[in-house]
Image (cartoon, rainbow, N blue to C red; front, side, top):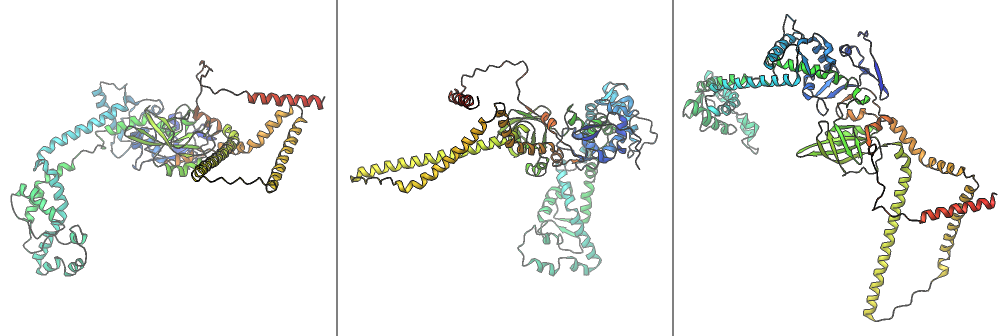
Length: 626
C-alpha cells in the first residue's frame, strides 16, 4: 500500500479539487498521490506550448506521449542528481552548479543515481569554458549549446578521420552501398559453386529447376519479377567464376554492370569475371570505410555527461511547470498564466478567444470535441508558406455573425500573427443573453424570409403581367383586330371567398378587441408585468436549456481529441467561460462622439402612433374608470 504520510493541499476550480504543487516535497511525493486525483494521465509531446526537447527527455519510450510514470521517473531522476531538491520549485533558468550531486562512488551510465558524477564533471568543464564559478547557474541555453558543440566537434573529428578511409574518393559511399546490397546474392552464388565442386550432383540441383522455369512460362515477365530475382545470380559450375558481361540473371544484370564499372574496375583493374577471392579483396579494401561509417557519432549520445547536464537543467526549469499543467490545471483555472494546451489568441467578430487548441484533422477532432458542449470555431491559419489549424472556443457574446468563410487574426504564444479563416463551426449556446433573445431573432428571421418570398413572388407576378400586357399590345398593333372586351366581374363567383375573408378578419378583430380590453381592465402598474411575463413565457424555455448546457461545458473532450488523457471532469462554468472570451469594450476614460453624419434618419411615425395609443388609453381610463 502506498505511503500517504505527505500532507496534501487542494484547491477547487472548474468544479473539482486539484492538488497544489508548491514545494519540492509535493513533487517528490507525487508517487503517493492516487492517480484518480490527477487531472491528466497523458499528454502529447507535439501540439502544446511547452519546450519540446524537455518533453522528449521525459518521454522515455519516444512514443510521442508523456505519461504519469514517465513524469514521476523524471522527478525522481532529477532528485537523485541534486543535493537540494528545493531548486525544482525556485524558478531557475537552469541548474546551479553547486547543487549538482557528485558523491556517487560507483558510477554506472545506466544508473540514474550514478549519472550525477558524470554530470558534475561535465558541468565543471563547461563552467570553466564560460568563466563561471560554482555559485553560478548553468542555463538551459548554455547546456544545450554545449551539447550541440560537443556533437559538432565529434562529427568534425569523425569526418577528418574518414579522409584516409575513402579508397574511391567521393565515389566510395555509392560503391559501399552497392557492395552491401549485392553481398548476400554474390555470397549465395559462390556458396552454390562450392557445393557443385563438392558433389557434381549438386550442380544441376542448385541451378534453376525445370519446374521453376515452367512456372515462369505462362506469366507476363519483367526483370523486376520476384520469381526471377530469386533464381541464382548466374549458371552454377564447379569453377566458381562469375561472368560480368553476360550470362547474368536479368533481375540483377543492371546492378552487376554498375558493380563492374564503379567498383571492380577501379579497385581490381579491367576484368570480365569475378572470383570469390576477388570479392573478398573488394570487401577488404572497403573495410576501413565500413569501420569508419559505423563510428559516426550519434547526436543523441551522451557526450561526457553533457546530454545529462542539459537534461538536468531542463528538469530544474520545467518539471514544476509541467506538473502544474498535468497533475493539475493550475495555470489555466487560476488565470495566472496560460495552460500548455492554449496555443494563442484568436481575434474575430469583435472578440478575443483565449481557449485555442492545435488541431491536425478538424473533422476527426470535431467528432469527439462536439461532446464538450462548447461552441467551437475551427480555423485554418496561414502565415507565408506556413499553415496550421486551430479550434477556438467562443464562450461570450453570440453566434449571429459566426459563419464559415469569415476571417480573423490568430496570435500564437510567441506573438506571431496568422491569417485565420473559419472552416467549420460546432454550434452550441454561448451565453444566456443569446438564449434569451434567440426566439425573437428566429421569429424575426422567419418573418423576414416570408416577407422576402412574398415580395419576390409579387414582383415576379407584376413583371409577368406587365410582360403579357406589352406583348398583347404589340400583337394587337401588328394584327389590327379589335381586342375582346374583358369578362364582367362575377360577384356570385367570389361571394364565398369574400365571406370567408370577412369571417377571418372579424375573428381576428374580435380577438384583438378582447386582448386590448383585457389589458385596459388592468391597473397601469400591471401592464409592464404582463409584458415581462409574456417575454418570460417565450424566452424561459430557451434560457433554461442554454443554462443547463452552459453549466455542463467540459474541457475534457476538446483535449482528448488532441491526444490527451483527461482524468477529471474539467468544467467550464458560466463565469469562468465568460473570462475566456473578451468582448469589445471602449477603453476607460475614452471620449465618444455620438454625432454620426451618416446615421439613418429616424421616422416620426412610431412616436406619433405611440402618442395616439397613449391618448386613447387615457381617454378610455377617464371615461370608464373614473
